[in-house]
Image (tube, rainbow, N blue to C red; front, side, top):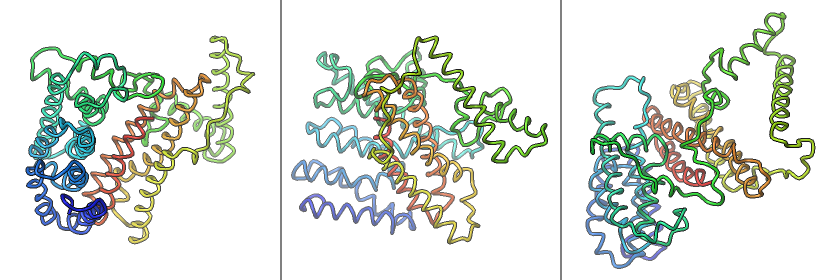
Amino acid sequence: IIKTGSREEAKQAQKLAEEFWHKVYIPQRAKGRKAFSIFLDEIKKFDEIQDVAHQIYLISVLKWPLLAIGEEDFEEWAEFILKYIQHSSGKIRQAILHAADYLIMNIIIDLNIDDGKKISEAEKQRIKKSKDRFCHFTYIVESLLENYDEPRFRRYQYISSMPPSVYKSLQKLMVEVLLRNKYYEELYVDFLKGERSAQVSLGKETRQMKSRELEYVGDADDFEMSKWMECAWRCVPCGKDECKICGSIKRDLQKHIERGEDPYSIESALEDVGDTFREALTMIKKDAKRRGIDIDNIDDIKEPPRPEEFPLYKKAKKWRDTIFKIAEAEHQSHKGESLWLNTEEAADLFWYSSTLSAKTYRQLCNRWHIETGDGYGDFDYTYTKYVLKECLTILKKSLKDLSFLAPAKTGELISALAELNDLEKEILKI
């Protein structure tokens, strides 16, 4: 049906593939993998499909087999992706980009693993294999970029401004799917050093051609902020005395204890907030004076739109609400005694899902201020982008880990992971 049916029939077939994923693959992995393997035969006969529309219908349904057997049969899928990212049809290339995202997601999800975490030798070998696959795939894409490069492309500062071409699609594959943050860039650079036995870099073009819109206000990957700032949003703060956040909290607690006061009372909390606000205001006034800014006359600074006025924020919040509904249903069905709800992975999932929606709104406001030209948002935009990337990385790893720790919820958690993967593209383009 996907290869010959009408558009409506193809859409119905795609829904059936998703339904099969949830109802057959999730509870019966071996049976599901065997069934999804038929798509490996279909992609070998891809050129036999009658027209571009039906070829796109097939590519669009590959999301589910890629999630199921992408890692297991990586080389065959990679060959398909690399061949058709060079297709003459821009619509085919765009569909392949989406498919590539699911293939790569399968192998990179565990790469950014904590060095201090104890894992089995078999797991170490699996991660090493995934790293090798990722780096060799990226290397081939970089080689293709060199093959398709033309002088006419160098006049464009942004990928989005380039005319449709194989080169543009390869740039998007490299920047948006493969080298999506600094960790994967560094991983690839280390691979190149080993491969070429020489000092190499990614090259100015790949790094400069990141998909930016409107005014460029800095690259979060190259941005440095004091480490203590992370304690303002991390699930687990550092707790060090010298930290400007944790140290301040500790000193406030000690102050109340020495006075014989309850440090956790509402009165103590209000006093601490007042002290912090006065300290912050003093710092702001000093900095404004140094910069020659009159902060007493701010009537021309407009209030940004409310959260619900941003469609992307509503998407992020809806995703966050879905996560909490999954948790609430689990809590109710096990009368508060569910084991996976009490894991560190679950704690990260709940904390960072809320942080993601909050920081998405903040970033939308930053972009709004930049567009209105009122001088606000530039500095915070760069740091917030870094925070969003960190949250997304942690959330994806938490969801993958929990899909194994909570077998009864695997289908819902994997679906949430797929939705987050789609959401990530929009959030990082703010």
